[in-house]
Length: 220
Image (cartoon, rainbow, N blue to C red; front, side, top):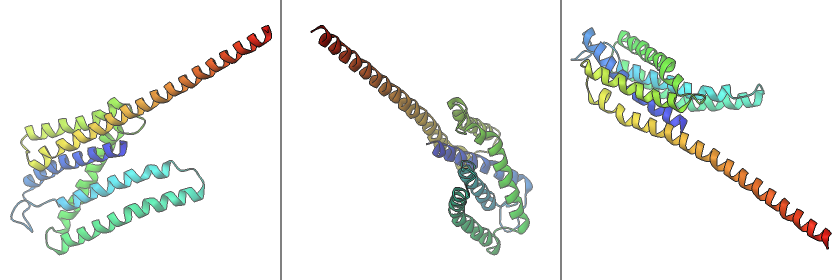
């Protein structure tokens, strides 16, 4: 559930950053390859961010491995197999974007830089709040922070269905995942503690019964 919450938060941040991209692109006024401002490739920025987030999700699989070569090789192979199809698809989209005349190379480079910058901001702020070692309050603060940024962006004039409305269900889903994981983990811990206490009580009761029987046997 933690990974699902992180994924929903990443999707909400991606949609929020889309509004920033559109705002910057409108101010640039570059209308090459299109009839409206098109100075930053949204496709390149979006898929760069997605690919970086997927790589970030795969990295912990390596960090949890021991120094054993076999386990490291298995983890590396799993990460490569999970990223290779996505990377191939992204490369095809990049080629289609250029060969189809949708963007110039300069606009695609700008999209790449914007996507990497968005990922850096996401990683250094939002993602660090959602790691497993963080408390539930920090994890829930991440989607709430995205909501605040989205509202601020809308207040400043950049309002759209994609960057203002669509992040809302992603934020709600992320909060649900974090809170649900917290409730389940605490319920499981309390359940285990209750079972352990019951077993100890039963063992103590059985010991007392046997002791009473031995005392009665000695008296007779």
